[in-house]
Amino acid sequence: MDFLNQEFYNLIGGKLVKAVKGGTMNVINPANNKVVAVVPKCTAEDVELAVAAANRAKNAWKNTYVGERANLLCKLGAIIAEHAEELVPMETAQYGGPVSKTRNFDIPAAVGEFELMAGMGRSVTGNTITADPLARIMTLREPFGVCGLITPWNFPLVTAVSKLGPALITGNTVVLKPPSCAPLTVLKMGEYAIEAGFPAGVINIVAGPGSEVGEAIVNHRDVNKISFTGDSHVGKRIMELASRQVKSVASELGGKNAMIVLDDAELDNAVEAATYAAFFNSGQNCGSPSRFYVQEGIYDAFVSRFVKAAGKIIVGDPTDPKTMMGPLAYNACLDTAERFIESAKKAGSRVLLGGERPTTADMKDGAYVMPTIFEVYDNKIDMMQEEIFAPVVGVMKIKTPEEAIDLVNDSHYGLCASIWTMDYRRALLMIDKLEVGTCWINQHLKIVPETPWGGCKESGWTKENSMLVFEEYTFHKHVWLELGDKPHTFWEKMIDLG
Ligand code: NDP
Image (cartoon, rainbow, N blue to C red; front, side, top):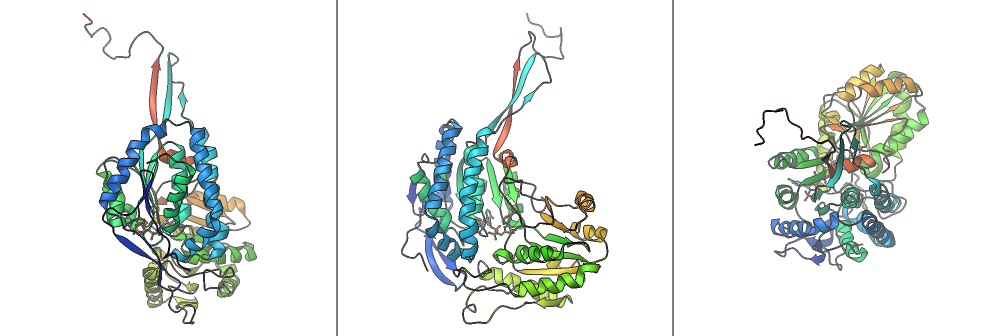
């Protein structure tokens, strides 16, 4: 299926427009490397127009009753739900996510996120402070104004919505840049935003390369807030640029997440969770575990069952509802995965499963890599330290829980980890020592919008989802109302009032 007969537009100032200079870029289906759609390729000139539109719209939007803003978010969610059957194949074709994911997760999650943010965002509050009885002291929660939202391809629609929802409900206007390899569903959402009735300029969407369009958003003087999800290296570049204007940056970055399986773990559950969390979406999840630390008493049983279960994952055509794992998002991801596989082999790790790209007729032209499990003997090797973002994982044998903690913390990333044990007391004490932003006990990759999501260290320190996300899209303006009859001064009787 392709979308070559459809036009895709930017959304700027309430109008669907092509790129100013007329540039276009191809969107490629990674399952067969064929062009599926052509979209605008913007430049800094388009960003200028989009930011100007967002800037014009910001005061009126901030002063709109929050209930009206919430209604518009819900309407946009409802329109997305109505178009689910159009969006599912589009999402699948642009980056290879199987329909079992795009239909069952992506579209409902995007709708649910809008509904949740519309609800929770109506009761965002400031604080009152009781420091001085002769004053009423409070903080007002203010939007930043224009927010630049820059999003990745692994959940193209959901990631965009999880930024749009909280940004808009708290009264910000936005310029949103979707990923170049997978911009289709976000561009479609621009059409739906007009249908929903959003005022011109509140939502602006510009497609184009991060190096030009993304950086133009980050560098723009009228953009006060950047919310970025993506690779840690790109996140560092964005923070460097933003620091020149002391711009606020929310960053959800890469991870090298761990699963710790202790001797007393419930084996079936640990194996099922490992197989799903490591290979769902071809391992292209920021929260997927790619390092497994398994205690020696359960090691052989866990590893043999994990390898067997992962070997039965149905890999193939992402449009087939039975497919569990599709291709990687584009060819460069395949090259990265293969580079890590080769370096792990050279480092002496043992391939327990996969390690090769499939050669069957249905997959040979696509960016496929089979589920791959290595037995690893050294935590310092590249594949245990760097994010691969592919279905390639390493398993290491450990003797004690303390050893696992040291190995997990031996990383510049700190997104998430899970502990598998029936001893909750021990697990809770371990969690205190793990340097991660999200930690599960007997669960992994369970991310729901009601709970906070985010990491620490080079995974970024931001929290998305839950009530905490509103901290990212508002700042506290301190207001002091004096009730006493004298102004404050340390110069008592020294000021000559004439
Ligand atoms: P990238 O960082 O490559 O791209 C993300 C976005 O940034 C894209 O829109 C990209 O544009 C843009 N971009 C690239 N360079 C710049 C730049 N110099 N200035 C401004 N914007 C730029 O990430 P991927 O799309 O490859 O996504 C995968 C990464 O995202 C992984 O590292 C993953 O861990 C992380 N991620 C983290 C999550 C979290 O919650 N912590 C959640 C999901 C993903 P273009 O597409 O044009 O290059």
